[in-house]
Image (cartoon, rainbow, N blue to C red; front, side):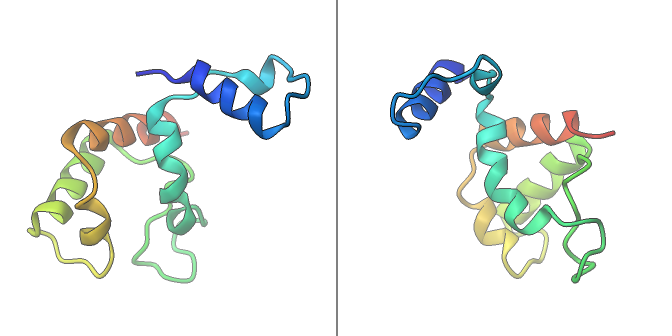
Amino acid sequence: MKHAKLAAVALAVSLGGLAVSQSALAEVTRGQLMAKTCLACHGSVAGGPDATIPSLVNGYPRQLMIQNMKAFRDGTRAATVMNRHALGYTDEEIALLADYFDTTRR
């Protein structure tokens, strides 16, 4: 589901009604909006200060993302933090995140 109009309204409101360029109103997907929180930890270069945290900056394979997120959520993959994060996502939301990160691969 695309949320371009909602994003445009939110941006316009946050800018206090200032004129907004077309490029600033580019279409934003729900997966892209949700992905912003992932990048707080996974936005560093691969291997970063903690090699156990994979970078998502250059994307991540869709099927692997879905498999890992469901395993974290279901408790079949051990984790310190990701198991708690994954509990908050539905299958649909996991797929949207996976779609977004898969398209950012270079």
